Amino acid sequence: MMCALTIGSLLTHLGITAYARLGETLQLAAAARELAQALRAARNQAALQQLALTVHPLQGDWGKGWRVSQEHDGQVLREHRLAKPVKVVASSAREVRFSKRGAPIGEGFVGITLDICQRSGPDSQHQVVLSPSGRVSLRSDEGRRCAGD
Image: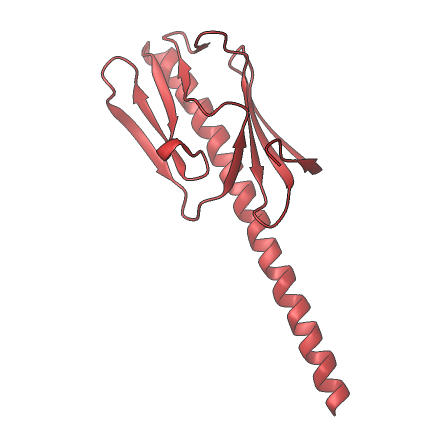
């Protein structure tokens, strides 16, 4: 009977750990998709409405969320706060600016890479990349290391 209880508790512990890991993986994937979609939407809106727009990380941290605002007067068009903050390692901490034509602007803009990282380790499975041309891509790979670790 003691062996059965020990095996049962061990299996329960393993199941809970796997379930928590799955929850974190799904949260990271959702955050990466939402960030990529926000950058695409800001680029498209800038081009369609002929407005220069800026996408800012909230409180300087992309892992907390982001805000899209008009460049000329700072009017906030939309803000997205993540329900649960995630760890995001950015190749550049600055905001992303789009011209009236939807092209990224900024002195020497060479693109930005945002790694959505696991809190429990140095691995990143999701990466949002904004190229110098303005194309936004979402990449998902196993085993990539976070740039800041």
